[in-house]
Amino acid sequence: IPFPEQNCYVGFLTAKADTSEAVEQALTMAASAIEMDLQPIECECWSREIDDQLSYQPPARYNIKTLDNYEFDQARKAVLPIVASANFGELPSHLSVEEAEKCIRWLEDCNKGETSPSFWLIADGGAALGSVCDNTCYVSCLSVVLDHRHSGLGSALMRTLMSIFARRGQTRMEVIVDPRDSGSSGLFRR
Image (cartoon, rainbow, N blue to C red):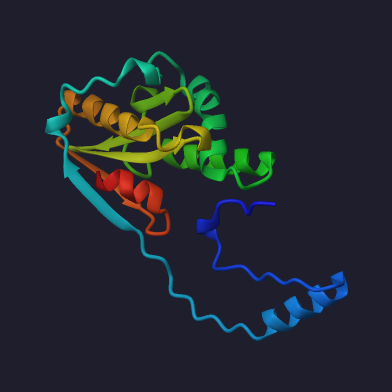
């Protein structure tokens, strides 16, 4: 059975033996011998100018649209399953939805500037939620479901969000990067 998202684990212990009791004994002994000294993870804040994205138009194949005609409740219902699946897919479904709701509510509570469904994008297999404060905009949640990763969708969502904000007059975009997530780090670096 494949492990769920592996960037959230410190490591794994495995064992093989003739009986399940011998496996359990080996794992118990191995676990008792482990000593860990963990350092807190420090996320990085990356920013860039966005005026070069002013005229960006996403390829039609991604079917990216804003939720600007939606009320918050409607917008939340539209993005919730995508955020849950893409960002919390390793959890049981009811817990992944709860965690996704927390992320969306955090954004709605203006923790990274003001947000609006006008700054929320949805696509087949992805979503991006943005917010704004003064001349800086933020990518507060980028979600691409597993089947659509490495397809260019994440980049198209990011560039579309930058374009929306650039046309509104914002000049910089910031994103908080978790160094454990090499996939999104590469996307944000590009």
